[in-house]
Image: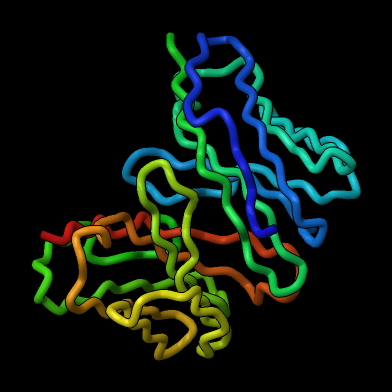
Length: 112
Length: 115
């Protein structure tokens, strides 16, 4: 199943709070899970990525948690800031050809 | 400067027009991609070129015609489009997607409106 399901569709968080975005997949041939951040008027940009052989990866305030048995992964944004307001896409790479499958996106709004 | 430049940024065209979108990458990558981004939907992969050869056509209607003259340039030729083709068209580039976890680098897109 070449799908990645992302939730929620939109998220409002207060400044300083934790933003959590979840993704789930079916295809066990996925071998790389990046997250992209997109600001209005801009293209998506790689934020952080994880391979399935680790359960967590942290870069600054951004953390990916990966649950291989559940086929789920999530993005946590600690101490969320208004500047984090953007659309976030999870993705999964098919190891059969390198194709990236994207989730539907989550529009995050961080209120001051 | 994203390293991937798309022109024009905005395009309004009638259903009988012919227009082209242009993408240029300055990152030394070998692969280039066209994606379609519609509101509330996942990014839809349209075409992939690797070393100038088309490696993926994701069942895209023939009214969209890609062209990749070299690894740095990618075009999307448009003709007799439908209003439902209105969307943001994103170009991206990467190293050879078959080798390692090469991230995609996106341009800022062309906002297309078909009237």
